[in-house]
Length: 116
Image 1 (tube, rainbow, N blue to C red):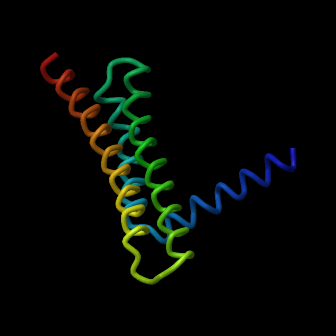
Image 2: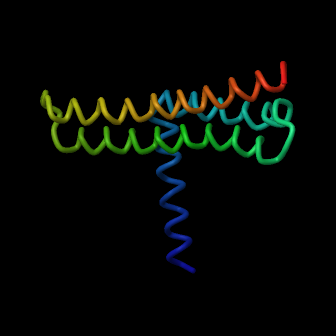
């Protein structure tokens, strides 16, 4: 049980660190806060609501991983490095793909609600 508690505390520390240091993560948290009540209005069933909130959580997940990659890369070197630059760009691209998926899911749900 103490291992589980330590893991939860470490996870919370990581969450707080990301919220304090990353503007994008804070913006995505704000979107999550808005997404929960909006999902209730937009979606007609529990699975659709879960999907709408889930894709926003997926964006947060990818942003956390991207942030971790960037922070690790910065610990390795702060010097200009084309290889590390590409790695950071790939993490950023992953975050963009997650946002596109979330956007498409939300657009589809809203369109279905309005015209379905």
